[in-house]
Image (cartoon, rainbow, N blue to C red; front, side, top):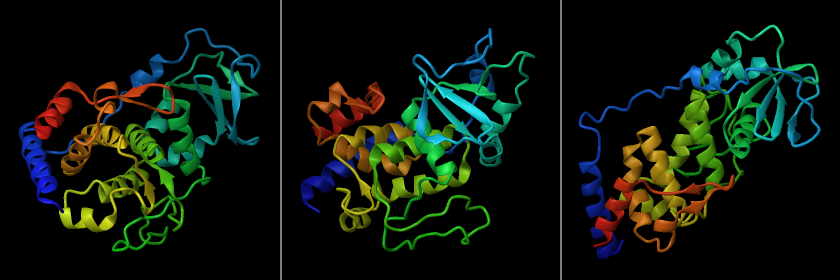
Length: 274
């Protein structure tokens, strides 16, 4: 590693500590069930697939018993499968419903406020349509037999875009899909490591399991803040220091929204570049 790269990374690491929580404790994620309940319409009725609502191509199972309506996209999946892996889905589905429930093709409908692409990535894993590999050679691929707690098999050879991993981290964090969250965070920390030797040898440019582009560093910083993964911040912020226009303009996400650094992290990056 060049002297200039090491100097900037060291400076960024020091500045990061100024903004860390005093006790450094990683708090358990929390989601308010009331937030989901509030998104349910007060006047429930039968939803038609005509108009703007469409079935998801992959995640519409004819024998599914619940429909998740996410903006203009409907996912027909299995209630028992979701509640098995997510306490949030279990609590959400248990909320008392009025006698006249909203239905779609005889299935109860639950409104979800997340971007459809994010929910699609989560459901594809939970329904067994997508499997992933552990990327680093020093960490052999896990299988479902490694631990009774591992619910999602990992198969070598799959490759994903960083936006997909970011969606899995956000959604598994929000819905408490703990085994998936653990695995997704493991991938995340392998690439945005605070170990300089590992970073130099692992290929932070994404030539292995994960395809990462320079602007993905902005999302990496935001994910680190969301999940309290402070070890990710030095590398992610260092990579942000290499950005030009994206640093202030932000990066467009798949759902059309813009990913930006917050004011404090933008200040960290600007200080790290000087």
